[in-house]
Length: 259
Ligand code: CAA
Image 1: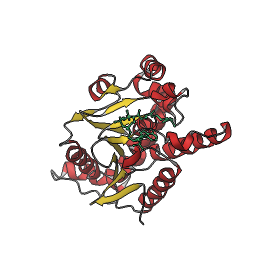
Image 2: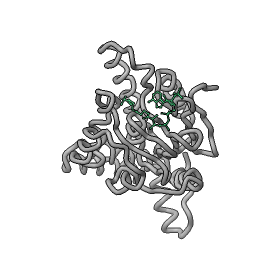
Image 3: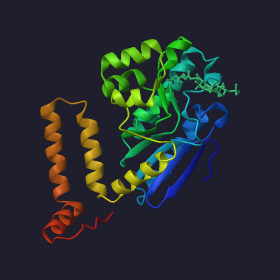
Image 4: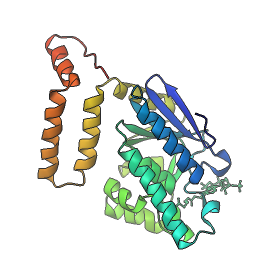
């Protein structure tokens, strides 16, 4: 399938989606939302794909937010619908059965920070910039930013970012726990791919279970989330991955996980 607003590539068992609207610094419009949705369909249908990386084409921008020129004449109903469309796509990304890594190469503002936060974790270039500048436009984040940011970095940090609209450096984003690791712009893509390949070498069943257990457990109380963990632990142990992993350890060899 060919796309206009994204570039979709597969490197062995790692899919890479690059946002590709360079003239608008990869701002998100309905075409991007539709095409990303189709790319996710393609990924879900292909069991050989084990990890997804999201990044921006070029050096300057990951995503500079939702497309302001698209939103300028919105009615309240249009705005609410666009917000719901973006939110649903990010819920889908978050619950994809495979890990998703945000590889933030430049500006991740507004919707850009929101897309990155819906990934399982964020690697960033030392030159990346993050922020929720919607307040400067007289609006608020609309793709889940007010909610995911406080869950990721705590309520006070989230309020400060959303209230000031300040753009922060990659180092500041790492300091508050938004970004896992920083790399030079030259190393970022290679290092992200290395981690993706490492993750892709593990068992699919246990990988999906670890993602779901951490993700869904986060919104539950500790007793219920631990109960969910026990269920998933039991399921993994009796799965082909679990049998292979345990046998390989006892036989002193590397495991060979099947799909
Ligand atoms: N929407 C539409 N176009 C955008 C855009 C956006 N979010 N961000 C940048 N662009 C466009 C600019 O309009 C410009 O286009 P022209 O060349 O046709 O004028 C082009 O990209 C390059 O941008 P700049 O000339 O501004 O580049 P810069 O290097 O001077 O500044 C920037 C870069 C700091 C990212 C600046 O472009 C900027 O502040 N962009 C807007 C960021 C923003 O406010 N994002 C939040 C959007 S609202 C949102 O995301 C709501 C939500 O949660 C759903």
